[in-house]
Image: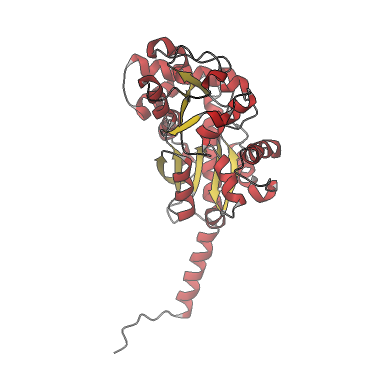
Length: 339
């Protein structure tokens, strides 16, 4: 007896049509676009994700999102290349440009925070300038990832011999700050939310250690997606970018403080004055320096600078053409949805 299922021509046509709809990123029957997001874990990231949930912006643009936070850039790339995630919204992307040159099927698709919101902290009173870091240990993430690259860029710009510094892979910026306070490493980059609480933690910032002042040309965070997701779920990615873009515009405005603090307490945990103070400091930084890419598009100049750093540190052999490394069409389409 033949127990194999028989597929009639009309059923085959229907299956093919469903496949084409999925490839085009067409919404499901319930009107939702399913997108798997992966981001680097940090207090700032958790705050923004909580704000997205509270405001319902992903749902507003018809997205059903699953979000995973990981500790560093290598895990981000693994999630995208394996297909378990579709897009990263909030992460450094220097290592992505390296991977693209080596053939990774990934594209940079937008900007997030354009200005570094970090400073280099130390507990050692004898470290007064960046030059004093030679012969010392600096906490960071993996080699080539955001924390390592941005610190190397700053030290090089300020005349520090990076070969005389030992980088220690600690994890996220929050992990690095804890390691600095505990004296596990001599220095390390951490977010601006703790800048006004230096006395409380017994740390200081050496001269020249404010990234936002010394390295404004460095693009702190971008968004990138796999070629597979771009081909198979483009409209879903556009809508995710629109949700994040709407959030960037909102927090860049003067009426977002209460919502930002609430999101910080929910996203990071802890209903205490210190947490609220850190959130307020971070929000004030956003108001003063306006770091977020409210138009989502990353320029060719910014991409070229980031690739230039990779070449300088022998991570890339040459610059990949802008149109090969990026696809900004989705960012432009996302802005149309917002406007």
